[in-house]
Length: 398
Image (cartoon, rainbow, N blue to C red; front, top):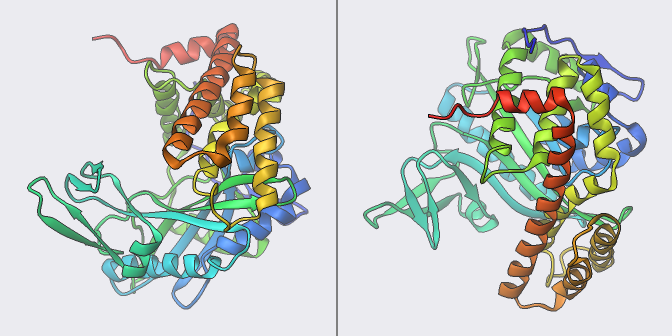
């Protein structure tokens, strides 16, 4: 496949969004105002030494193509001016805490966690094991303390300070959003790509890599000069590297034990769209228009509901409407013989004890994800070009 590097050229629309032309063309502006409201609620507040630009990413940025997104993915470029790299990392952590604090009173957003830093060694916290290099997850109490404690392999307590790691790793903030307009409960995830500008003007990505610009729809036109300046200062990864990363994910999600052909189809769409393979682009759009594609929503919705059920943080009517919406998806789109049983299981979730609820949610998520994956696998295998491409990416037998 031709995946040579191309220059990054951003295009603006009449609605004040901007990004690569192919990406902007995939976005339906019908819900732009509501998406902007969510983005503005969770964006990094600019202050001396901190600039930012927030965008939609993933399925949220492809609303003409992916009619049934599972969540709301946001992407933010945060540029930090600081005397040292260590100071920039601490400033990044402080801005994230400030964002959580600003969002905390919001009536439709419930905080879940942030990810910042990497575990320096194998460790354990409670019953959860962490491998060296895995992202560190911070709950609300951890943010308040600005530190958390884990145990190393010898059982010794190790304190991890917020913003004290050498590598920020995969930086992300998660909330659960009660969308009253649609009676939906959805994840709102904001991934941050942070860059540090030293006193001499040198710009360095804090995690070592500047993410490419091939998926973002930026929502605030006034931030375009900043984004273009950042492109000029730091060359993002090229098209070849972007396609290569997507190919690794196609290989992963088509491998036994990790199969999720819905994710395969999404990655293929991004590859074909950016490399101008229009026949495959149109075919994939057709696949995502079919009812079975709606099952993609169920897993994300079910797990978003887990911390919401039994609480009073978010609007009860929206929670009830979302449960009824999942039941409708099952009735309309799931063809398994246990459909009536699954519909009833969704209705019983609010009254279950925590352990039984988790087991029921796992069953719902696994069953619908398997059905969705089988649908996409069957359809992808019917297309000789896409089937051959997936086969070419499979690991070589030893």
